[in-house]
Image (tube, rainbow, N blue to C red):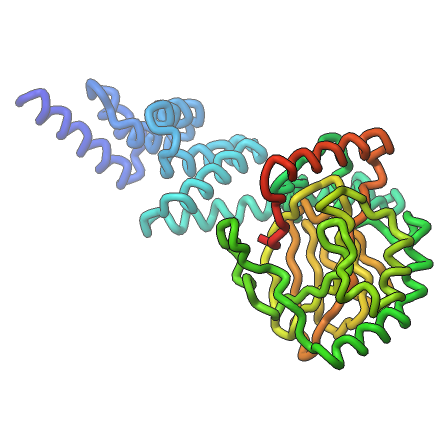
Length: 379
């Protein structure tokens, strides 16, 4: 008998023994082979209850192919049999990620489902364990947020401005109204601003599109480009008051004068009425800078109008300022049958001191002087 025929006969004998449940005979046949198949060796050791032998055979496979799906799943089951739950979850998660990336044959689907169920059970036990550890503490939002991130119940959203990143600032999606002394006086002017809004819309119900195609730069990749469904009527634009709008809305201009808006030649202040028609969705995007906060004073606020910034979602409520970091991924919806309008403007981040603000003003003006100023296109 040739060597190849002998190896084939021994392999077939091992397979037959495994099918009969005779682990000892399978191991004996495999032991006579010159190079026994590692997966058969792992299966034989597993049947024999030799977890170390099984793991060693599986390691041989993974040393040559670290993404081998059957071996990853088998290593997870091996760890479970050792009562190493955390180890098993690591192997199962690796297997599930690999299956999601490349697919899996039908015969592995039951094993993948078992792995998924095992991960879910372990995750719930871990969550219960952590919850018990802090159950006697008062509600602590940052602890709750950190715990949710650890458990994979929330995604991590960080500042990712599309033009300029300023380091060392807090990673906060929303700021609260009572953190700023200028907010309450501005909110008190809501009725006067709404009256001016109604007067203007009686003459022009639609505003110009917020995202417009410029003639001197590529068209922005935004489905609302040149679409008045997301409209804008500016009071300050490019650092100057808009002559056709500012004089007819004195309450708006008086309210804006209360806020610490940046003053940067050719760039800021920036303030407008932002209009969102029924059924409109502003898709997820990042703003240009993280040196500012965007403020919304809600004016027309039908139900089912929502702003998501990072992992947090808030509704607009008339006269209640929303203040957020638009360098964090954000999106907005108007799912109602009516139009939503807010007064939108920007203010300095409160954590940036006077000297750094002056330096940033010089930097931004130098950037704009070097070439056409970058425009926030909501994309």
